[in-house]
Image (tube, rainbow, N blue to C red; front, side, top):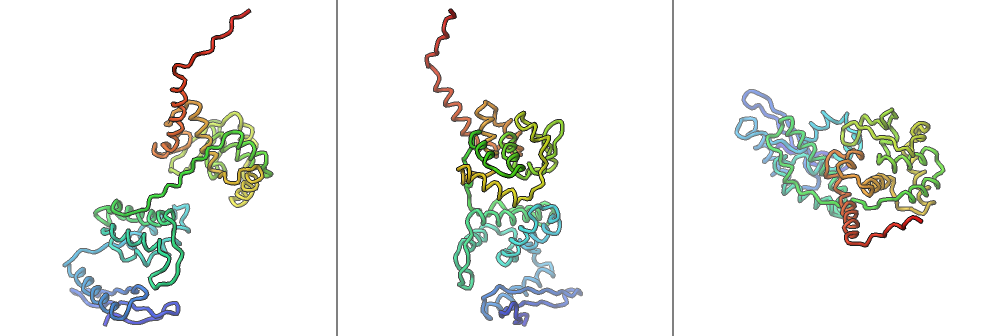
Length: 337
């Protein structure tokens, strides 16, 4: 029989093995069966895999490319270029038993089951597990979708079926736009010189925290060779932060930054304001000054206008205020004496 019993991590598991000579070539394969299945189920699955393997190597059926195959190719070719490489690998390894053997061309029903399992409070054995939020689920599926798309790009699979994946919608947009007063109060409460400077720079440039910490100062402005959207960009230096641009060089760690920021916002009375909100504040200031969304998106480094549309309601509010002035009686200037 192709099924054998082994012990893995102190638990009994079943392993399928296949070793035959087919048309003059020796074929060897082995797979660890899912945990919790019975001996009868293991035998049935083993016979099924036997038939599929034999059919594949005799040309009766085409090879099935699994999501696991796509992930392996993606990791092998692209992992070195990922900024979140370690985190991504850990997440993919954690959920590998749920996707490794899944056909990459049959994603709709599988994605529904997978989302349901990630939301569940118990695992396949009935043991309690921590359910994932929809935001975390979306993150896992985004990694898998990227791997499948890459497999299609390199010709490993013929059709990209990722559009059939059911991915939870998450609306995690914040709509807090700090004004200059709030920014200054937090900056004055900040005891760390570099973070205090970064607070002002964020408000007057719209840069992200990571961009501020690594930006180079040039005659044209803040220079960024590597940005979130993959394109270099230049951010002009506002006159109010020109001195900071010349004098402050950032040497602190992200952890030190976060600690100083959290202390400052709490002391200033804004415990829920995030550093990233200062970027939204910059966008709000530009829009309220009459700058169009396309230009605002260029300053913020948005690759697509879709990202800038989150600020469209601010434009609507400004236009509404303008329309409200129609028909209002203007105050006549006083006659000079």
